[in-house]
Length: 549
Image 1 (cartoon, rainbow, N blue to C red):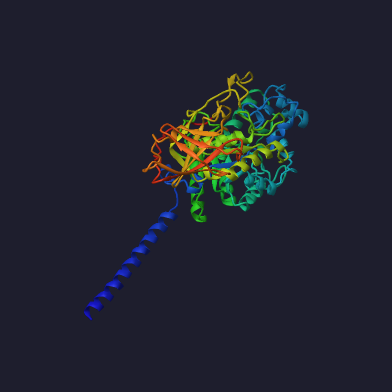
Image 2 (cartoon, helix red, strand yellow):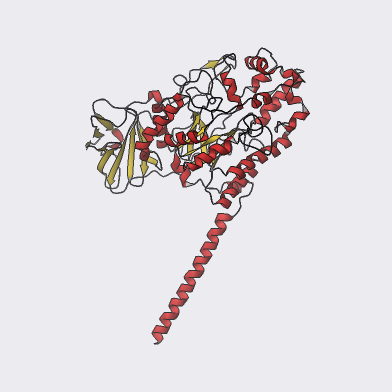
């Protein structure tokens, strides 16, 4: 009897101990999850990049706004070099009346010396071709896992219906909540949302223009009119700019709750623009809404924070062991962010092989779309997105949710800087400098280029061109390379086809290809092994990311 009593008592005490321990653990976990972030880097750096953001690999946004209209002004007649069309106000407020953009602007709106300024362009911004439902469906079809729009560019024009400023799409021009409409449709497609902010540059740019206007005696310009401060939120001194920038950014955070914030320009570290407060507000919104949010870092926030973003891959190391992406336009040239009348688009194969190369190197790709002034798409851009999607629909297992393998590439392994193929402008006489280099040069990829990605116990290899002779040769997977603790390949599947025969020699793996291939751009193979795969350990050793100016 005593034994039974002792046993029962022991059971009760054990249950009480487990319950208390469980409760304490729950409390600790809850405190950890809900503790608010503070507006300092010690606190902000505790934020972890969510797994979904590491898995996504491919995202889409768009550089589209009031400025896009200038791209249709053929009397400007200048190639889109150095943000020529995305920042047309540089020309509007130029002291030289024969500057092409000022001349074209005054032809349409009257003299800038009489108060005709950038607001006039914004008032004419019409979006009759904007179809957020079709846009979101096209993005979904492309295979992108997150999407959005350039929320506010260097011009400070907000693409939503803002209560902070009338310099926005909801109050001036289309009088529509463009950001809200597109993010709403993207969410309906089951995708994550991204809002990109470029307005940290606005203060320096327009302060410079104000100083130049005063210097040249152009006192009639609207940027020098104190009454215009009610419209141009970025005028009136640095303190007012900081206050309004924070208000605009937190308005988007609170109103639309995007999954990703992306910052361009001097958004932290270089200027006291309130970025720490904005990020703390954003992360705390995520905690409140139970959202795993993410920040993309274009060199603005120092090292090892968020996801690094390299513009066109410029100055990027061959392998970065911290999460990163390349940010690139859908059009071919270095600075083709907005649409313009001479635009040409990349081909689907260019994006597919670039994406495979970046993912193997531990990165991803953020593609910027080029909408026409009215918000519609050129057919070539539709073809581009549908082509990317057709490949990812079959081969996405080699991209999404993968991590880099011990060997990440063979063939053209090192970064491929170049100034020719996709970057036709080597030098621009008006600027006296060369365009920023771009990498990789996808035209240099051939059948010798193999990229490796891994997931769990499966290795994926992607061949960046179609080989001749009906065989794929992978030098990195010969028996001399231990692919697992048993060093034995069990089977190989060509995605979009099925199992294929192979021969593994000491110095190479030879895969037999079928006569009918699943695509003509890049062949992806899924390789199963016996034993446990060797995995690459990412330690975050990269300490430097170049500041993008």
